[in-house]
Amino acid sequence: MKFKNQKREMTLTSDVLSDNNDRTVLLAFSSENPVVRTISGQEYNEILLHNPENVNLERLQNKAALLYNHNFDNHIGVIESASIDADHVGRALVRFSSVGMGAEKFEMVRESTLSKVSVGYSILDYRIEGDNLLVTKWEPYEISMVSVPADDLVGVGRSLEEEQEPEVPEPENNDEQPAEQEERNEETENEPDENTESTASTSESNSEGNSEAEAETINNNDSTGDGEQPETDTENNDSAVQEEQAEEDQKRIAEINAISRAFNIHAEITNQAIETGLSIDAFRQQIKNKPIIKDDKMEFSLNSLIRSIMDGDKSLPSGKNGAVVANADFAQAVRAGVTTTSAKDIIHTDVLYGSFVDILRAESVLKNFPVQMFTGLTSEIAVPKLVADFANSFGFISENGVSPEVDANFESVVLKPKTFTGSVPLSRSVVKSCPQVEQIVSQAIVAGSAERLEALILKGIVDAVVAAGKVETVDAYTYAGIVAAQGQLGDEGVSYGSIAAVMSPQTKATLRSTLRGDNTAGVYLFDEGDLCGVPAYDSKVLAGQNFIILGDFSKVAIAQWGDSLELDMDDTTNRNRGSVIARVWADLDFAVLVPEAFRIIKLA
Image (cartoon, rainbow, N blue to C red; front, side, top):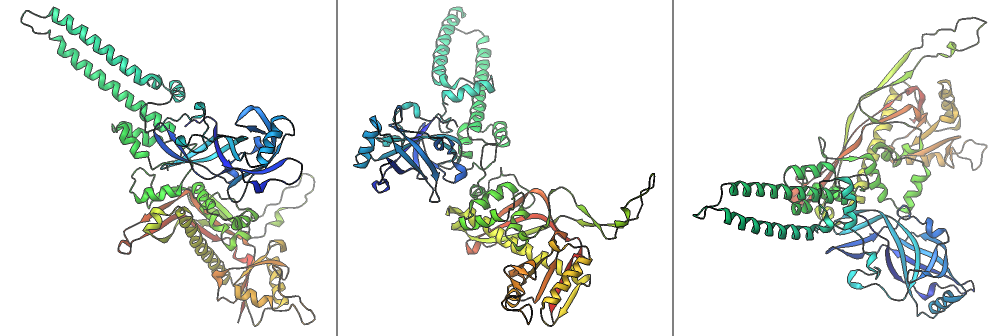
């Protein structure tokens, strides 16, 4: 779609006026309230998304103009600042001019006789979900005080000028807009001129009718005495029918291509519709409520994907177990459900969502450790592990001396793809009607998967340490015993700055109430996030376990194969209960590369 500049209106409330003499007013200029746009007979609910990443405020922040009735000649003030606030409302501090029309309009605002605020904006990017036109990127460029709102019949907040009507090649209308035709002429020479399609078709029809009438007169004059027509008439009629069918098919292909470009439909779906002879109306119906196929400017919607799976859409990209969801798209769905509070933690830990395991790590105790991450793999990998001392291969030599050679013993730890799966039960009504189903599904998958993966990895560390014989059983946790374990790790080549600890919440509580020594007061083993000088964390998956894991967690590796995961909505297993099970699959593996880099201190 292409949109010209848009406008929408809000009402200014008098309680936001400043009481000082600087002639400033704090006003709300936009919100996420839908505006009905009637475009070529089809109504869309235009919704301006109001997250900070959706709105480009650069032009407003650069001393943009405060206008009257969107007239650039009626400059009545300046925009001092603008923001998109947490309540999803755009607000601006504006300052009215003290001279001319600016002074007049400021007095009218103060006496509440001028209370309508309108914003002029450009649509930069969007997506369509059913009858909703979700504007995902837009740029306001001016704010106006307006006297008369737009015509309600064409949508509240629309401008009165005809030139502000968005030019949209709608799939509900056979005749496309002239602006879109200019692009289509550049892309293909075979497509008809939509701007004159109706008139051209009429003219061609009239012209063909006249020509056929003339041809009939001539044929009648040339006919034989008994009134028979020449044999060539039948051949000409067959040829004309074939040409007409070819022309109609050409128009059908051109129309389907135009709809696909306007709505960013994947090429595979477009080509399939063309090859199977799908009609234009049938193609419109097919894509009407399924804008889930991702293209360059199309944003992924987990909501649409989930409902498309439930509807049995066969055009979805699928794997062995379900619909394929790219890691980046799933990460976007997870971020869409992040609250302001939880978003702070994610930013603080500097976790980049590049894969499914990155998301899981961000939701577990592992986010605090420098775990090695291998993602986007296509085959099994062998991570090298040096187990013998090779320091003797370095040193000084005499002039023309020979570099020392040492047969260092290298080993490898192999990581192979293993299927990791989980399920989330949901009521059928939630899946079908709840607007937040994307948040419910993605957050439940992440919460369950993260906790399970955390438990498996910590158990893997414990098992590896036990097998290596690096467990010390004690009667009580003491400062001397914990420091001694840190020293043993140092002897294994683990630097003090790399050591961290993890334990159960109950063990943490015990350490927080245990003094470091008889001669210390108010100094406990676990104090302000440190365990005897090293960072320490608790994990609920270790509940009921009385031990401390000390070590270098960079010696743990987690791997994911591929750049996607698979999602399926199972509506058969619990059909008698009226519920749906969301199942996810991914290819993951983990390994403890160096068990000697860990120690376990366990209560007897």
